[in-house]
Image (cartoon, rainbow, N blue to C red; front, side):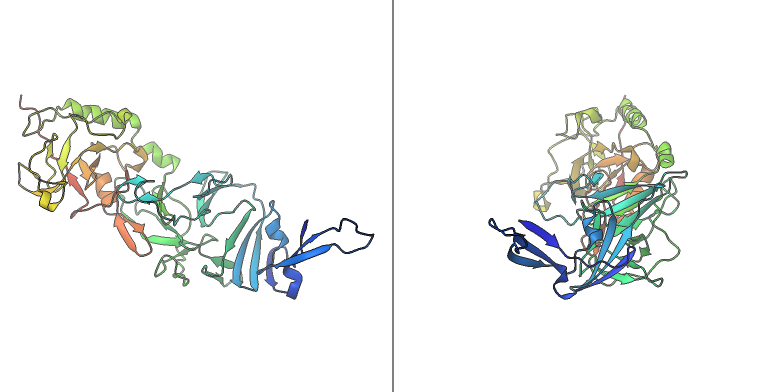
Length: 406
């Protein structure tokens, strides 16, 4: 059987394709077994292409972006190879052209937990182009090329012609970026969330995540990633750290030294008088052990595990603190072990509420003030270590330890 096509192609750079009757068809045919010279093959039928198939789309060695304007009109923009940059692609597809595979993060439990739902992360979510020469600038663009080296923006995707006559557009659920004010350091403050287009332009957010009307162009901002930039793919949020920024971040050795120093202070449960100790990260986050510190997340008082003070009428996790009588969640404390998420090497003095992940004060306050996109409209601050939505007035608490009585 033969599958042949008759595409009509415009200029090699930007081709506007219009439906030319049956020229956009694929004929399904097969030679006759007893065919005579010049005899036509058996024709089974035709597949009509709308929009038309282009040579640019069928050439795997040629990167191109297809903008579908209507069922009979598309614009194909072809891209050439650039020896001065490297391209990396991010998405949920496990195909070879994706360099970094991401999965949805369930609030409160991390990736892959909770009920299975249809992913909102695009298979080819975005691409990052990095200059091969110093200062190795990295730029982010919405959408990624598929196995055929193509990007397709369907009829419902937001797309438009720019003032200089070129095409641009947005993906269905969008790629959002937030650059922190003051860099990613002790003086950082959350920035403003923006949307990045397929061509790397910066826009204000749409009314909803998949609205067809784009936001306003932000001319004084760029798609250059900075240390601490957040990239949201509608289901997962990524943090970009630069090599220079990571040199300022605490190391795993420093985090381990902080854990050992905290344990060397021999904190005690103020009621049971047992000595508390943070477990080794090598043990993993499994069931809490006997020395695990626990905290009342409303007041910050740290205890050992106990079974008293339950307020089951308010929920199985609700307990009354024996020191201050505040009622609230009572959870085990876990040291945050991802050094790249920390703004500074400060001591582990604060915990996120209600998950109990422990880090420095400045790291805790920064993430508690940073709203992360959720769904098509909402924003929630979340624990950077597990993705749990933060609760309470501040989203984090100062830990109150009791030292040894001797």
